[in-house]
Image 1 (cartoon, rainbow, N blue to C red):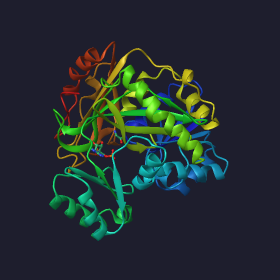
Image 2: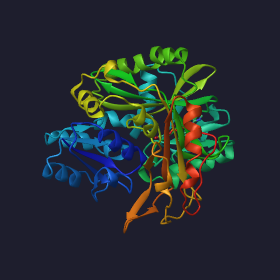
Image 3: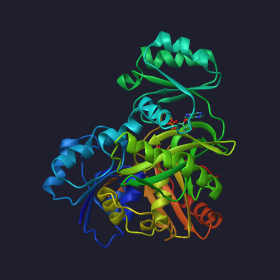
Length: 414
Ligand code: AMP
Ligand code: GLY
């Protein structure tokens, strides 16, 4: 089979790594890919939102299956477009993608189907919003409705900050039309965890749990990032919590899909806040997480290509997902300055000195003249499996300093 993976981050490298293990696969293309995917795939210079170019490429190369990594092409309708031309593609359709593409749509879905989430009000008018925030105490959370590259959520500590944020989004349009609407919601104080699921034939089938570390500094201090470390399983996710999630959340989402006639086939990534032992939904994503994929793919025992195809065909079953007993950890090396301003283009050295059992996923690298350079805020995901997390962690941290680039940073407490 010929497979096309769309995207160019650590998530797509991890997907390509797992796809490459399938005996069915002869050739992988990655668009646009990165310095790491080059080792398994042929990188194609097409961006993730160039849907017509991707479609023509898939036709020309007779791609058997396209796998979509990021949300942007899903929200723009890549799956509907490919399917209208008879092409086989893994990902949700445009309507289902609204669960990630519009906070308002997703909050209304949760409200309609009585799924536990933070209380909210939506606004599209600045003056109404300024009056409406008096219905909330502080801190409160303001979310731009659309896709804002992970920057559309602002936790406001006081009224001054809330008013400033409302003005920036609704009046100054700092997120353009993605911020033409906003959601204001109550702040949930608890512990965060995520659950990634395959959805197929109306059934939600959870993967193993994973805990993402979002803050840039040790001890969960500093700014929010896309995620700078992850381990699987998540220490939070015990059987009692999982049972509550199934009963109070997953079953209701399944019912919601049925009632709303949503033909959701693909990945549902549920961001959860556990408040006093009760799970509440923070957000839905309709794609694999990054860095969650970097710890989940090495733990997955089954053939991912079979799983993708069964999901598309609507007949995936829980027993199709087989997991290794080993546990997995990933630590992301970032550029100095990330998640704010950072420089790119620094030489990366020492990869050949890593032990053979360290899996290195590339988030943001570029190969030029056979040398590897930094090419993003998140650069490399060092990944290790072990009998348990302690063992994996020890293996990983004893290797990571063998690799270096100027300004390299990583968290030591994943
Ligand atoms: P979201 O994109 O909605 O997941 O928001 C990004 C991050 O903001 C989440 O991962 C949380 O850390 C935080 N967040 C979002 N909504 C809330 C909320 N209602 N209460 C507390 N934290 C939140
Ligand atoms: N790790 C969080 C995300 O992929 O959105």
